[in-house]
Figure 1 (tube, rainbow, N blue to C red):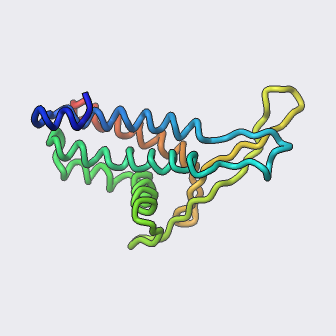
Figure 2: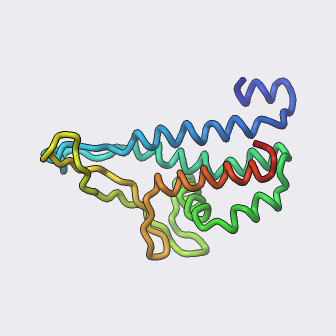
Length: 167
């Protein structure tokens, strides 16, 4: 059942689960958007807007799960914000989410820049090398691999929701 169908039928306390599941699907799409290209094509091939959109959408789905959980009332707003405020990676995700949604990278607490870096990755054929595009975010002088950050956040959500006995 879609969220729209659920709303037509009346309020449903499990609607947050739909966003929770969407977060995982979105992560799989973002993971597939990391492109490995043959070494001879480097400079001619790089992630395009569709691939980068998947990364941004994933950040938005991870971060906005909080709104779905709060709206259904299964966990208090105070508990949700305490959980988010205590997690450094959520601050980074929030900045990616808000920055890509509202076209800004300037925030009250430092700036954030999103860059795509190349990393050497061994190819399946012996002796051949490919280049792998990794999405990297820089925040307060540190670099983070975005997909690793997202994976960590999804695990934290999972543990938090289990701790609160809603998952």
